[in-house]
Image (tube, rainbow over all chains, first blue to last red; front, top):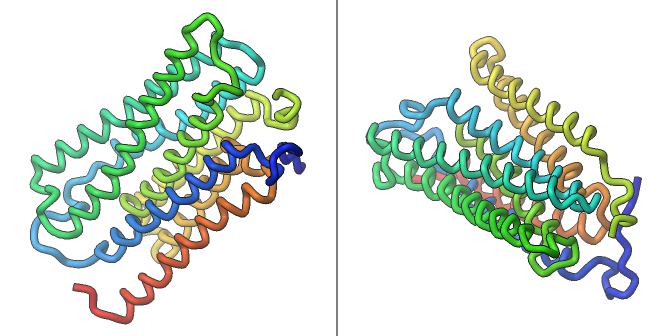
Length: 194
Length: 99
């Protein structure tokens, strides 16, 4: 089912902006790979202070994970609606994605606040530092994604609506959003479940 | 532009994929709570499930399976480099005394 998008006028045969986006995501994999590796160095070791396993709430984080996972569905439905040139559905799905992202972020802020009050702070020990840096950077990426989604939604309100050719391209924002989701798929397993 | 995306899945298929992802997540959570029962297999199974979810999202939602080989290679390149880094550090962690 090979359906590579052919761009014969581009030297690579791939749209340059899209290739650039994938190269960017590739560098992001290395960024999070480094953070996950650092986290794993200290996971399972004994440190002074309260442990992560004493404070985290798996049912709560599971619901957050499910919400972020479903935001990938709404994102791909927005993309699909734009391909079908249905501006209204595109805007609805974009807003739904942004809202689900915002709910996930609110959950993360609540979780961090709870951890802090229970004594699991950024400076509790080196393991807690790696936890907050790792999950915090993911949260920052989600926040940037929500801003991009709302910006797209705002652009979609204009008379000419959204296109797949514009500078602020829905396809690239969708790629970014799905990337944020796959990072969380890994984090949820590595940080919370294992 | 629509011709390029002619083979992309339909909304119905996307919903089916999301249901599969939801089920896999539910299995992950069930595994976490049945760790005493599953024992040493828990962590490998959780990793397999996470890899499965990862591949589904990248392949279907990010449309990587419909992209050119070059795009696939760039993405795989980042993954391979990250995994090499992870492996080297974990081997070092096992052999040396990180403190």
